Length: 384
Image 1 (cartoon, helix red, strand yellow):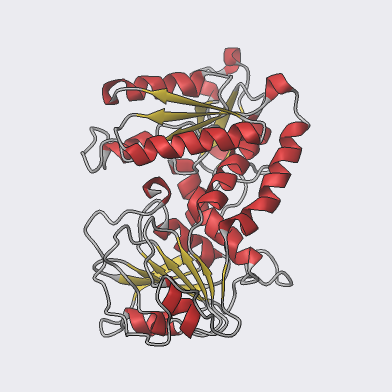
Image 2 (image 1 turned 135 degrees about the vertical axis):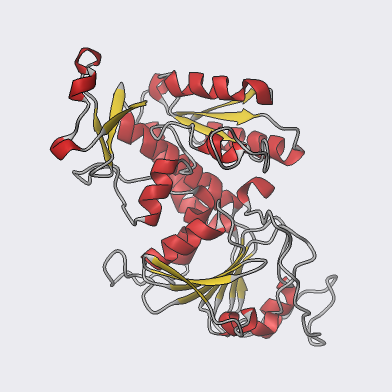
């Protein structure tokens, strides 16, 4: 589904020309797998999280289950389908889901009402709404919408607060380190796939479990590619982030351009993990580039590599053709986390000096002179 895929706004990544593979049978026949190669279904990764979610919601009173509201302000049939699928999954797992269809003119007001509504624990918007249309506030209108969602309800982890914590590798919302941040759903789904397949080394401390691993991500969107590159780099990996007109190396806290003579093929051939997210059926990576034993994860709505050729010719490769079910499980998980983090908080305040949130004082105490935080840091009241 395109909503769970990254988007290259500047065009398509040029397609390499794959080699021919005479040993691969036709699509009407069963593919002969290379030794150790296998296709990994999303269900295999998602099911443990689904059980965890169902157990958690079963312990909550039926009148206090987390509620997610999805705003639909476009005519995209894929968005509507995704909303229907999300609703069925949430109801199955004991959570509430409501789609609110609004016009683009009414979306900002409806969003603010949901921010203020204490019965709503999570908010998501089906993008794109305005596409690249500029905003009065700066940037694009869709970017402004992302930043309009309360951090207490941003189930997609795309508002400024969560972007800031992600790129600064800050993993908790509070100074006590008791409440974890939420992360963007599809990048988080890819991380969970990699954990499931053993790419993360459990014996290493948190923050170093991808140490020594090389990753190539094709497509540097702000929704999937860039945050995923930062997340993996923050866990110790060296990440090559490939886009239509540039390639960068992400390492912990740093991003640098690659030499101008370097090629995508060079990066892929040394990669332990390859993530493909090009929203075009015309882009196909050459399977011969993928090294033996690598993990290939396709997060695009199209398959960006010939599955049969990959599985037939690359020994030990593990191919995940789609991550949609894992993404929805992460959406549910994020909603539960928001419900736990902020349930009962009438208001919270963001201490911009400490970079975290703290419970707000009573409304009667919110006088202007008292809005100074510790050591003079400004504290901003945020709606919960």
